Length: 299
Image 1 (cartoon, helix red, strand yellow):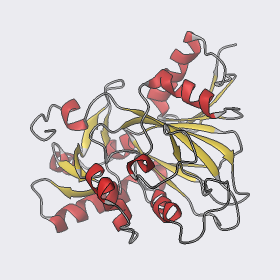
Image 2 (cartoon, one colour):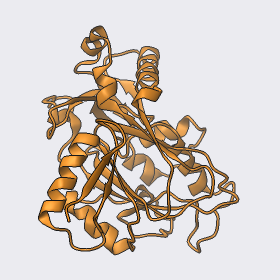
Image 3 (cartoon, one colour):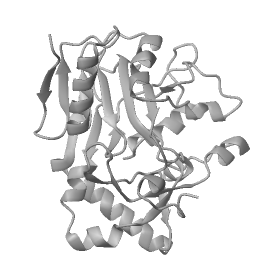
Image 4 (cartoon, rainbow, N blue to C red):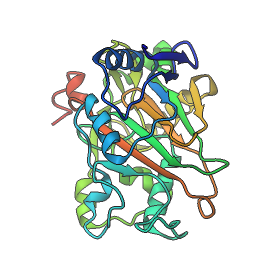
C-alpha cells in the first residue's frame, strides 16, 4: 500500500500514514515522502516505534548527520548517541534535570523562534524529532512557514532584504535569556557565521526567509537597525496564518525543513513531567551564502 498524505493546510504541514519508518523503506515510498516534504515542509508520522539506531538509519536517507552541540563541551557527559540532539529534560540517569542544571538552562533557548543549526557554517537541511515520552499537558511545538511569510511581504521589504547577510551564533540566542555559560572550546566552535536573510530552495525553487533567534548583526547595517529589522521580520513570519501548532503523541516523528521553517517548543512543567525527545539533524549541502551566489560573504 502506498503512503497516505493528509494535509493540515493546502501547502503547510501534513500527516503521513501507511508507513513504518523503522523498517527498510521502499524506494517509491521514500520518493513520495520526499515529494510531500518539498511541498509541505513539516511532516508528521504517527506511531513510529524507533530505537536510536533505527531513527538514525532513517535519517541517513536524507543526508549526512550532524553531531550534537553538547559534544563541543569536554566536560559534558552525553545521554544519547552523538548524532542525536537531546532536547528533553532528563539527565544521564533519566532523572529530571534540576532547576539550575546547565543543560536545562541551555535548552530553554529552544522556546525562542529559531531554525536548527543556522549557527553552523553549513546549516541544517532538516530535523527529525521523535517523542519517546511527553508531558500530559503543554510542551507543544509551533512551526512557522517562512516561504508563505516571504510571499506575503510587501515588495518594498523584499527589495530591502534581498542580498542581506546576517551573523548567526547560538551564543546570541542564549544571551537573550541571560545564559552565558560557555567555555573556551564552545566560544571557538560557536563564533558567528554568515547566513543570507532570503534564500531560494533548490528543490522547489520557492523563495524563503531565513532568520532565527540565533541571528544578531546584519553586515553593513547598524546594530540597532539590524535588531529592529530582524524583530520586524520575526513578528511578521510568526503570525497565526503562517503557524502550525503540533500537539505531541508518544511515538510521533515530526520532520521539518530547516531551510524554510522556524519553530519553538512551548512551555510545560519540566520540574514535574518527563519529556524525552530525540532529534536527528541532517546537514544541508553548502553554506547559504554559497547557495545564493554570495561567495565573498561566505568566506
